[in-house]
Every structure is written in C-alpha cells, then in structure tokens.
Length: 186
Image (cartoon, rainbow, N blue to C red; front, side, top):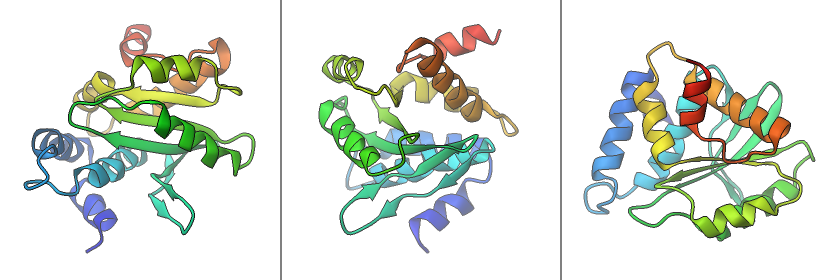
C-alpha cells in the first residue's frame, strides 16, 4: 500500500489525525522507530486540510522538482512546503526553493510553509522582503494547537488558511499566528 493510501485509510477524521500526529511527533525523531516521519508529516498535513473541506493534491514527484502538495482555497492554489525536524527550525533555503517553484506557476499561485518545529528569525526576516508577498507560514506551536483544537467535524484548518490568507492580502502579515486567530473568533 502506498503511503498516501495508508494515510487516507488511517486518518478518516481529526481524531485519527491527532493520533497520527502525536505518534509522529513522539516517535518521528528516531529514524529507527519512524524512518518516514517527514514524508508522513507531509501527507498528514495535506490530509487534515482535505478533512476541513478543502480541495487538495497530494505530494507530486517530478523529474525536476518535488512538491509537498497543493491546497486550493476558493480556487487559489497554495503550493505546500512541509518540513519536520527534531530541533532545527527551517532557514531560508526551503523558502527560496518554494519561491522558485512558484515562479513556474501562474502568478496567482501562493505558497504555504508548514514547519515543525518552526521557522528561524533569519527566515522570517527574509520573508519580510519577498516580492510579491505570497507565502504564508504555519509553524511549530500553531500546528500543535490546531490539531489539538480541531474536532471531528471542524473546519479549523480551512478557517485558519483562509484567515492567514486574508491577513496577508489585507494587512501584509505573512506570519499571522493561530493564537491571534483563536482570539479573533472568540
């Protein structure tokens, strides 16, 4: 069974997603216990957005590039770059590679960085100067909070992406944090 099919069959709701995420988070840092943790993390994140009601495309491997998935929010495509590391936050390189992939797509294509445990200060500073501003960050504790807050019928991942996109478009904030989002909806 392919990994994609396994994730789809194992994760049929957010409760299953939370279990899978907690297992990856607990055991994923050991290559002996969980050799494919990074790849499973990629598929799981895409699956959780799908369970929120968004159209998605699972990771795509081509001769010249690999895309960690595509999420469609109201016909706007987001190319996903997922990173799952033990300690290190992601630096500039994955963001730069995502920008190159986006340049080969229609101009309305956006980017979504999903990073566990997060993004370095240098990467955030780099993103402040990107032109156009079309990359959103979903990182570290936000991922934990979203998964632990989501319920079986919840559209939290949909609402989170939509709110992050609006923050970027309306206010120029590419790293709008989930905690601010949760405060806004109270």
